[in-house]
Structure formats: structure tokens, C-alpha cells
Image (cartoon, rainbow, N blue to C red):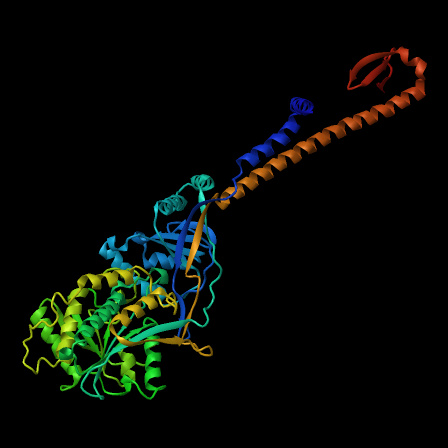
Length: 596
């Protein structure tokens, strides 16, 4: 059977060139057509923030991506996925992609951000608030670079840069032959997360010497914030504040263990959640303690509330207040003790007080102590930052905390001098209460490392998170009556709304560009056109021969009718073409045609 088939094809190709053309060309086109799309690389991407606060939307509003990759150097970015590296990123380029209706933006970050040049880090930190200032329709993702992803970027950059060539033919040829990449996310469209609970923790150390003792409240929010929740590690803001609070709890729990050093102050420690979202955890905690209960340390004699925020870097220390403390109060005593310890024990630290009134017209509060100030509780915030607008407070580049140990000891010494009233007792300013043996720098450093080893954005830390359970464990080691507090958004008029799909898997499929498909379609159309014209020519030729045949048949019939078949010998043969013979009378008087 195979021998017969082979013989048939062999005869077909030998005997008929048009038939050979018809069969051979489609086979070639099928062979050169692009193979099915192949996944060039699969990698994890982290989506920009998406949340609503006080009814105002922020961040990107889309999560689905399925479009061809381009770099910002390409002339046309419409409906394309624009890939940018951090070293080449600028707000102008980012806005260019948005103005040209790009389909998505992917920003490639280095694996180790601490190795980036400081000028690039500072520039990106300043751009993060601008990127989040308004909502963005297109999806914006961040990816950590690797060799394959950088290769994809390089190939896409080469393809995009060629579009600026002066020769249209070069651009067309290069575009048609270059490999493109289709960027596709595997997740679904983002949707609002319902019944999300923000968790806060409190614990206390009871003072001695009476019932109506003054209370000092130490507060630090544990959540971090940045342009992408899954990349927000918050080493300084506010991993430093939480680590310092835990260390202060450990130090004073040791002092409160012994009768001789058990002071006459209640110490209330509060680790709040939702700090980056207008201090939602603190707001609910105040409502629970001041409005919904009859007995609370916050309702009694509160000496002051000290909030710890961004204390891991810098050689400055600022006490932010909404109302300057009056002389003779515990707040004023803390202010003076901070000045004393800084000048006598840490002269390299520049301490100052920063006064800023609470602006209720703003959408968000500046510092956490303002939540307490609104409820008429004396409060202030300690930070190495001079202003709440400093970009270090809300950046994914916040990955280092190098001065935390020194600042922790400075604040611990100042608090101890207030609690034990050492200045009035005549203690010198250089007196160190906490010795090097009491200060466990390794433990403090390990707590910071643990906190910064995982993103702590409020959208990622639920009530069952390991972050909450571990913090609860550490507080339980040093404090009494450790409890949780939860806050959920009001369903009718929510103050905050979180969205999912913040982390997805993206596939980069190696594909030919759309121009290749157009050229292939053009070649197929041209081929079909040639086949059509060839068939038409064959039909026209056959029709001509048919007309000659019909005319000869009519002449032959006329010949037989006129002369009879027996007179055919009297005619001479003139010529014979395609079976049609021309006959001439022997006397040369007439000529007829005969179809044989």
C-alpha cells in the first residue's frame, strides 16, 4: 500500500508543476509558522497597594495582566506591559506609560535593596507617595530580579529600541524576526476583603504603693507600609519601635520583679495594628477603654503616653508634641530627662522638641500620639525624623536599622529617671541605670531581624498571623494581663477597605510579535492569490480550445453535408493541430476543417 502511495505522489510531482506548487507551499508555511507559545519564565510578582481610606481609593485598581511586553523606550506603549528596572525608573517614565494607556507596568527590583546606591534608593522613596497619591487603573507590579528575568528585559529592550531606527524596512524586519514576550498573570481580578480584623495587643506592669497610681503608656504600631504590601518590611518604621517596646518591657519587668526597684507607676504597653491606616487599632482601643468600660487605666491618672516610631537610624531624636508640656508635669519631666541623658551620655545625639498642632481637616493624622491627644490624653511621639512627611516612614526601601541599640538605651535611661524621680534625688546626669549586662543587644537585634524577615502590611497580618502570635508570646513573657483587641471596618460606612490579589505568579511566554502574524497572513493571502490566478489562466486556456473545437465541429458537419463522405479523397491535407485537420479542395477553390 505504501509503495502505491509513494508512486502516486511521485507521478503527481513529476507530471504537474501547479499541483506540486499547491501542495509544497502550504507545507512550508506550516513548518515555518511559530510553534505553540512556550513559557520562557515563571516568577512571583507583587502588586501595588490597593485600599480605600475614608472613602478615598488609593493605588492600582486592576490585577489582571495579559499583554505583550515593551520597555519604556518603545514609541508605542498602548496596551503593552511596560517593563522598567529600578536603576532606570523615574516618575516621568512612569507617567509616560500611564499617559500612553499602557496595559500594565512591571518594575524590576534588586534582590538585595540594601546594596543599591543611596541616591537611587532616596529617589524611589520620594516617588512612592506620588505613585499612591491617586488611584491607577492599570495593574502595577513589582518583581525581584533574577538572571532569566533580566534576560527577558534585555531582549525586550533591544526590540523596543529598534523601533526608533530611521529605516522603516529595518524596523519591520527586526520586529518580525525578534522574539517577543507575552506577560500573563495567573490570578483573578481583585475584590474587597470582607470582615478583615486588625489585631492589637496590650499588657501591663502594675506599680506599687497605692491604688491611684499614675500610669505611663508605651505605644508602638507593628505594621509596615510601602508601595507594595508584600515588599513592606519596615525595619525602621516601625520594626524599630516594636523592638524597642519589647526591650523596654523586658528591662522594666526585671526592675518590677524586685521590691526594692518596684516603682510607683503603672506601665501599660500597647502594640497597635493598623497604624499606617490612620491608627485604626489605637482608635478602637481608646474607644473600648474610654467609652465602653467603667474601669481602665486610661480613665484614671495617666502621666503621659509615649509613642515609639522610627527610632532605628540617625543621630537625631525629636519629641513630637501637639501641645508643649507644662513645667511641673510628668510630660515636662520626661522632656528634661531626655535632654539630660542625651547631653551627658550620648553627646552625638541631637535632641529637640517639635510642636505641631492636630489638624482635624487632614484625611490622616500625622503621628500616633494625636489619637490620644484628640481624647485629651497627654501624649507625644519619639522619632529620629523631624517631620511626619519624611518618606522613610512609608517605603519598601526601609530595610536597615543601625542605631536602635543606642536609642533604646537612651530612652530606657530617660524613662527610668522619670519613674524613679532621680533628678530630684540628686542623681548625676551620667548615671547609668541599665548596665551593659542588662542590655541584651543580641536579643534586640534578633527581634529586629525577625520582624524584618517578613512583610507586615496591615492587609497581610490577620488575627491568626504568626506575627501576632509571636508578639503575644514575647509580651506574655514580661507582662501581665496580655490581651488582644480587634477592629473591623463598619460594613455600612467603612473607614478602611482592603483588597486581595496582592501577590501573584506571572508567566512570560515567548511569542512572535503581532507583525509576524500579519506578515504570515499576507504571505498566505499572496499564495492563495497566485493559485487563484493560475487556475483562472488554466480555465481561460481550456475555454479557448473548447471554442476552436466547437467551430471545427460545425465546419466538419457543413463539409459532410455539402460534399458527402466519399468526396473526402479529393481534398489535400494542409495541416493538423490538436486533432483538427485543414482540408483543401484539389483544385484549390475551397478549404474546410475536419475534426478527427
